[in-house]
Amino acid sequence: INRRYLWGLTICADEVYACMMLNDGFFVSLAMRISELAGRNILISWLVRWSMCPEDQLGYDPTMRRVPDTGGADVGVNTNDNPVDGIRYTIDCYDDKTKKKIKYVTKRTIAPADTLLGRHTRCFVATRYSGSGTGSSGEEVVIKDVWLPATDPSFECQRNEIKLLRKIRDTFEQDTPDHIYPKLIVGGHVRLNQKNRSMIDTTDAIFNAAGVDRIDPPSDSDTDSAWNQQLLRAHRRIVMSPVGHSIKTVQNEAELIIVLAEAMQCYSSILSKCGILHRDISTNNILVVRDGENKIPRGLLIDFDIAVEVDMRIRSTCPSISGTMPYMSIANILYLDTPRTALDDWESLLYVVCWLATVGITSSHHVSDAEWENKQIKYWHIGSSGEIADAKRTHMHSSVNFQSIIVDKFREQYKLLPRFAIALHKALFGNSNCPGACLDDDDDGNMYTDCPSDPLVKRGAYVDEIVADLEIVLDEFKCKAQAALKA
Image (tube, rainbow, N blue to C red; front, side, top):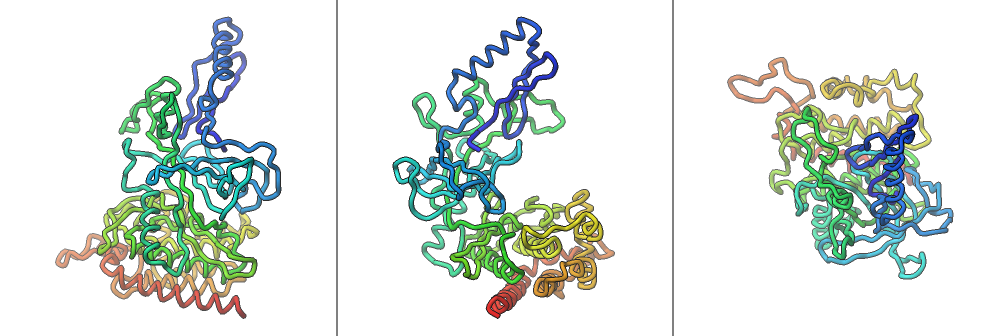
């Protein structure tokens, strides 16, 4: 957990290889034959170097220190928020705007970096370090640690989660909403002290410490590249509140509807007041927040990694592929040449509802292989992008298709979720100006009016009207869910 990169050794017969594992590649040295003197000498030089070099050159993160002998039952790693080990860390978090560093002590790890390649996103629940031993105090916060691709040394690209969260915080501090939202406390790049100077932690810093220059990878994927041709990635940390739990911790369908409704209320507020389009509504990005054991849960929308700022009047962005399978909108999957709007995210919400109602809303639910074979919803994440989009077009095209293919396969114990899904579908795909999801027979549009025949393109002219209908559905079913909990 406290590594920026990893070293390893592999042995095959009499050949030994040194391996370096980074975000975008697994690099292997030339073979060291231990049956030969020259090979043994090279291996020994590697071992001596590793035994004498600073810890950060072994891949350890000097800004993240393991706290010894902590133990305890309230710390650990598990995606369902149940602790499984006793490892804690102190973490330095630097704010790019205030230029101040704050130290925190982790209480548990809620998202480990469990893949070799990629962003290596890790999330911890922590409290502020009190200044002595392992003591900490204050409210619990979430620390998000991530290695994101960067375009230039300034890192001021449009897709900057810290920048967007800062805008959300500043906006809502002036105009406090009645919903919860991800409140930024600290946000900035991880800074290292190397050679008596402070520097931003990037993949460049890793290569420089190894005495090698990083080179940008070739734009042509078919071109052979050298081992040091890697993406420029910047190491960032975000501290925010409140602390949420997996959406799978809801206790029943009424709680799920309330959580989803509050998360989308947050979504709409951020879009209308901050001009930020989220673009990744999924089960991972909606959390459950509870103030007490018997309190009605609240919904929290998180993860603005791929969110973008949009024109406050138009509230749309250029076509691009974003989101999480199987919740991506059809336009996103197909990369349709039409602006991305709030309707793409609302469509993702519908897919979240359908998916959870099919597989089960809690972590204790399980769908057997035999059951899964009979559910057409499996084609939302199996096959090529074209095949997935075609399946969704068919399933969403009419109320009859949606009912018989998707809703009738929901778990039998759910009573509210089928009605909720049908109402969302009607608002999203049943608008009289752009009904359905499949292409008309005249798929090139009307040659006299130049109107698009694809309802997913045509609906771009009716975004406000459709969103208003969707918000009415959300309010209605949130009230029904609250009444069900009180009954």
